[in-house]
Length: 111
Length: 114
Image 1 (tube, chains in turn blue, orange):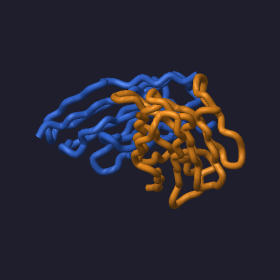
Image 2 (cartoon, each protein chain N blue to C red):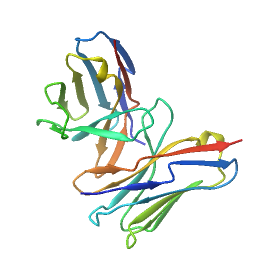
Image 3 (cartoon, each protein chain N blue to C red):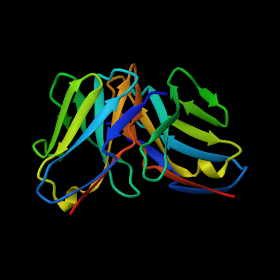
């Protein structure tokens, strides 16, 4: 089955700096890679996603890159703000609607 | 984005009672919904996959007689925790698939069993 690894587990950055979270996956059948932001006491929120036929996708301060050959994908947050502080989860999915989640990254943006 | 609601947001019950949690996709139809359990500072643990009009598929180790799932319509799935015990206290989160593949989560339900 699929195995998704996520690093780092915790990340602290100064406000305004960039944050990068990396995930690797093992199953070449995975073709959809969403990222979720979870604030304390709330459900995960889909913030950006990428499909296997695309190498990069950007939405304002958030971007995701995908390297299918190396089987890794990354979340990039630029110009971080305190409200970006949360736990971020990556996931890999296949056409069978099976989702495999990373273990999460706790991001703290220091004002 | 798509909206998924959950009700109630938190519930406290006595040991031995049953609790029902509702999950609704508000602006799209969802053939598939998922139920997760999340322990503090941990990732999401899939409990079961709920398919409209058919029996739910439970993950290994999840008791189907304890966690009853009903997906009666394309916008509603329910999870009933039967004969709840303190060890069932947790954060339960549902999600719904908006075709073709996007998964949207509800806000979660905090269950505390006394």
